[in-house]
Image (cartoon, rainbow, N blue to C red):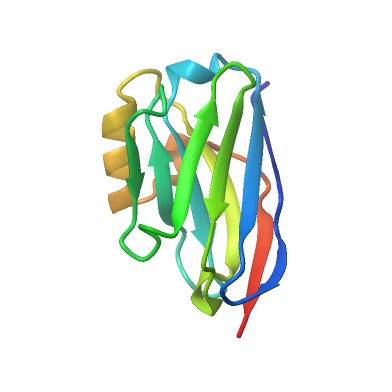
Length: 133
């Protein structure tokens, strides 16, 4: 059974930082692309960042580029999102997502940043991030 467990969310003031982690089990982690997806109240899920299988290629949506950094440790089966200079508009539930499709991880990342396909991913339960002004 594939399991994704997120941690690290919380409430902070604007300008501060948070670090999210996702621990993955039940699959060979380095065969799959991995992403962080957020959902704000009343909005669709939005992929904010994605890493290809090795973590060498990383992708960001425009609103977080330069502030967020995604990384992965394939030995520890973990995916991390370092979030700096947080803004109130970053408030959302953040989900860890792993592609259901082995390989083609760069294509997965490009597709995910354009449009999140719920059925194409394994999902964690999410962690709340709240940023106040």
